[in-house]
Image (cartoon, rainbow, N blue to C red):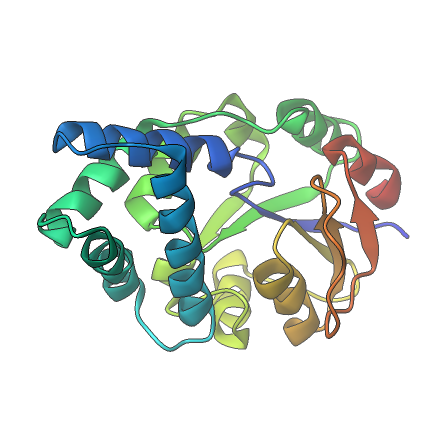
Length: 229
C-alpha cells in the first residue's frame, strides 16, 4: 500500500538513543565523581524505563519523571546527590550524544526525493534536548515537521498527542498515514489509538506482545522503502 504521510519516531528509530543514553549517564557520573559500571547502568535503565511507562500512561508530567527517575536511582544506590542537578548534567550530555541509526539519512532522502513523501518526527523526548540532537542532523532537510510531546501537551501514545499534531500539521492522519517506531507501547499503540497503520522497527528481534496491532514489522530501516513507495 502507498502511504503519503510518514510519522517517524526519533529515538532508536532515526537516532541511536541506546548509545546516547549510555554515554550521557556515564558522563554525568564522571562529573560528580561517582562510580560508573555496567551493572549500575543496568539498574538505572530498569528504573528509567519504568518511569517513562508511567509517563506514557499519563500518570506523571515529563518534568516530574526526569527527576524522579534519578531520585529513585540515587536512593537505591545510596548516593547523596541532588537528583535535579544530576538530571541537568545527564540532559546536557544527552543533547550532545548524537549517533544515527544505520541507513536513516539514505532512507529519508529516498522517501523525500524519489517518492515525495510528507515526513514528520513524533517523539516523547524533552523538547530542548530533541531539538538540539535532531537539529544537528543532515537528514532534517527532508523532515516537514517535529512533534514533541512536551509541546503537544500529551505523551505519545495518547490520542491528544496526535490530535494536536494534526492541528500543527494542518491535515488529518488517516488511511494514507503510517507510523514507524521501535516502541510497542508508544509508537504502535499510538497508531492503534488514532487508527492508522503501524510499522514496528524491531531491530533487536524482540517477541511481539499481545494487545498491539502491528501492520508491518521491519528489522532494517531500509525495508520501509518497499512498504511505502
